Each structure stands twice: as C-alpha cells, then as structure tokens.
Length: 563
Image (cartoon, rainbow, N blue to C red; front, side, top):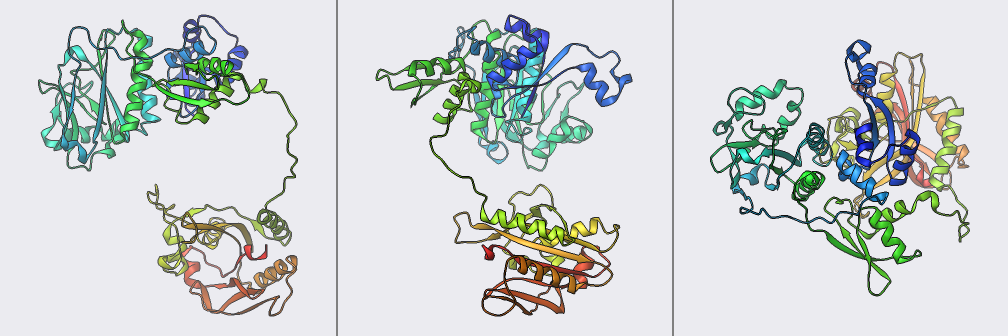
C-alpha cells in the first residue's frame, strides 16, 4: 500500500479541528485507511543515518498514512482532506465540471504519427488562475512523484509534465525526433544539450538515471514543442527550463504522455481535480453514472452512505435502484461491487451486527493438503529436513543442469522475466533441493533434505494450458551415494500409504534410463500399476553443475496418485 506523509498541523488546519492521535487513528480506520506511523523528519533521518545527520532537521510532526493502492485521489493532502471532510459531512461531495477559458480558445495539443514508435498517447489540461503557496507547491510536486511511482509504473506507462503557460504559447506539438535533432536547456541546467548529451549527463544522476532505459534504445525520442519551437519537455526524462513552474505561476499547463491511454486519462484527472480548488474558478470534469440495485438496507440510507464516500447518489423513481455519479477522482470504481464496498465502509464494519450463519457446514482440509501434511511429519521423523524452494527458476536449472532438453520438460515460461534466475515455473523439485544443498555444503554430512510442493506442467486439456502437480522429492548427500537410504525412505513412504510390495495393487521398482541419474543406478517406481516417479544415484555431471563435490541420491514421486 502507498504511504502518504502529511504534516499533522497542516492536516488539522485543513480539516478545521484538531484530533488526538487515537481519535485520528479511529477516523482513518472508519474511512478505510490506516495511520501507520507518527514521526518527524528528524526522527526519520536519525533512525536511518544517525543522530549527527539529523541535527538541524525539522521537528514537525508527520503522519504516515497507508492508503489503498488504487485510491490515487488520496495520495496528497488535498485529496485526503476532501475525502475526510465529505465523510464527516463537513462539506458536500464535489460535482466536477470543465470550465472553458473566458477570453480565448482552449489550448490544443497536436500529436504526430512519429510518436507511435515510442509513446503514442498524450492528454493535456490547464489549471487557470491558480494560487500557489509553498505548502501547495510542495504538495503539487509530491503528488506527481507519488503518481509516477504508483499508477505510472515509474514513468513507463505515463510521464507527467507541468509548465507555466504564460511563458509558452499554443498550439503545442507532441512529436518524436532522432536524439541528435533535439536540443534544449533542461530543467535546472545552465546551458543547452542535445538529447544524446542529456542521456550521458543523467547516467550519474541519482534520480533521473532510473528512467533513461525507457527510451535510450529507441531510434527517436518523444518531445513537446510550443508554437515558437520552444521545447517544453522530453518525456519521460526531463522538462525544459524555459517553462518551469514557480510559486508565482498562475496558469499551469499539464501534459501526460503515455503508452497506456487509460492510465494517462486517470493521471491527468488526478492532477486537475486535486488542485482545481486553488483556482479562481474550479476546473472539473463531468461524472459518469452507474445504476444498481440495493439489498437489505433502505435505498435512502445507502444513498446517504455513498454520498459520504464522495459518490453523489440519488434514489431512482422506482425506489428500488440508486443512480451513482462516479467522479473522475474515483478511477477505482469499475463495477457495482466497488460501490457496495464503499457503502459498507461508510456504514462501518464495526456496526455490522454479529449473526449466526444461516447454513451449517463443517470445514474440511483438502485431501491433497492433508496427505502432504501427514507425509511431512513422518519424513521429518525419519531424519530428513524440510526445505522450501522457489516456484520459479531458470531454464538452466530444470534442463541443462539436469542433463535434459528444455523442450522435453513441459515448462511454462515467464513472458517478461525480471531476472535470469526466474524464467520458468519449476517442473521438478530436484533442482531446488540441489541448490539448497550447494548453499549448505559446509554443514556437517550427511545432508538429508526433502520437499513436498507443487510443480507446474503444460497441459493442453486444462483451460489455462497448465496444471499444478504435487510431488515429493528427497535427496541424500554424503561421502557415499546412500542409495539404500533413499530406497529405505521410499519403502517408509509406501508403508505409510499402506501400499504393500508387489505387482498389481502393490508397488515395485524396475531399472530405467534417465539422463539425470548415473547409468545403471536409476529405477522407475510403480504403484498400483502406474509409474509414479524415480529414484537413484545422480549423474556426476549433474553433481558438478550444481557445484557439489560428493555423491548424491534422490527420490522424486508424484503423490497425487494416492488420493
């Protein structure tokens, strides 16, 4: 959940009253938020960097408030205060509308075809006759950063640019050009740079270097010009210095360039609606409407509750339905169930009476999970230590290191893996256990490890194209292979499952060839006439590829056959 830091005194002044810490904590809970921490800038620096670094830092009390990840309207002081004031019925839920300029035509942002190769979408708006104070200005900048880190996904989806409209002239053009053709003076710099020079300059910048990868490999870079050819910004990296805003700015031009048009509209709505209250004429957007049927409570009461949550609501003429206006600040509302959640929140979860369930049911553990738990206890009693390994791994772990071809593993690949270590969903537990042994090879021998978990296998018969398969895997690592130990463990498992040795309805093993195991030291396990797994001594090449030096035996069986 995102955390919003607000100055306590500034917050209480905006709310029109003071609260004790306990009272404000209770208010946050009622509104669906959580007061996470009460601190100060000095305390934060002292805790993170030491007391000497904290000397001279502010002692102003800060409230750190956790807000839901999809409530972008609560990421700044203005939205937080507005929501709480409406909730406490100190003000009416705002009805947003768009205001056209009185003395001129609306500004235009022209998007050229060249942008389709890099960031194809852009939206814009103007805040006119706004009055900034230092606190408002700081909140305005902080909201941009919060949105960039949240819905904008670190500027990959959306990048926000804000400009002093009085220093530039429309119409504006959003286009894309080769890096060498873009030249301007970036924000807070003393001279002009080409786009190529800027990319080199910001590679050492602690803040901007994290965004360079978004466009640095593209043939063209996005850029916004005004009608005089002045560069406003090179999204998503940096704005131009010419149009930077200040405390004296009266008209703010806001542009959002994006790879996702829906997210761009959400971000623009947030920027405009949060700070339009500081304009001479508030500038708003039109709301959408949604009708739904209300169960249980009276429609009038539910309408009142929803209005407390900034969702203006009216009972329809039939008395059975409510029409709800969805303001542009509430992009999280996409279904009637989202509205019902707000109604429940306004009603108060603590006010819901306790009732005895109308149906009588007996909870029961899933048979597969029950079997897994019973086996875990007995394997631990047999002297083996349980391990819990990652469900994702590299292709090398389940193929090359086990001397198998990746095409034979039926592995599900991750389409956009963040690291080479997490490329596929594991198809075997063995590689994870061997990596665990390698990480603990300095421990006293022998090492006896086991794991009972799911693997993922491609299965075209399933609607999602894959299925989970619960398996038991155990390894024995020592100076000698210890095949008899692994064989004995298999016999113990079968004894616990009440499967007797023998053909037909019993269990037996027979010699098998498997590239993962040493030739002549591998056996296939059959139970009730079905092949359920393998056991044997691992191939020396497998041992070496997992950076081990001692022999190792392994057991791998499918336990779903015993349900």
